[in-house]
Length: 215
Image (cartoon, rainbow, N blue to C red; front, top):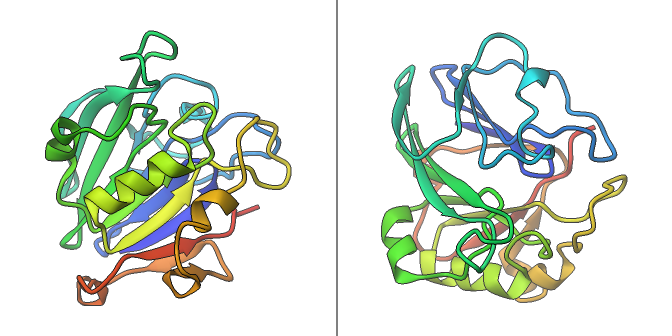
């Protein structure tokens, strides 16, 4: 499968069969959402920087609620969580999405804001590839993100929802999150695309992969 990063919390997930899922397409956040075609789009919550479905080409199936769905052979599960640490009182609900693609379990945490709990972990696990917000302020912060990584123990972690050049939102750069890992655990890609095969996944350690924002 392939993972392409479009910036913020938006990824293009493509199975080897060609089925394509886009996560949390953004509106005007300081740079424009690229035009991409998808079979389905997941929306973790209704804020403008995550729900710009109209920017996508084609007529994708829109998934924005909890429950299990299947799109052209890809199993997608929506899991209810909260956008804040007050059970949604401040910013409402957040839907975590899990994808089963080419034998891998990918988890997109959306704008998760609640602390790591055993009950939420039971619904999330297992996870091979974790897409996690690390910028704080509107989501979990760097320290909380590290706790999620430690408890989920995915083979690959891809940070998202952090401050980048041109981004207008008041969130932190990924530096604090990355500083909690040894240098050899962090890999920087030269492009915003990663291709993964089931055989690439080992349980020896967790690798943090930084993907450039596509512009």
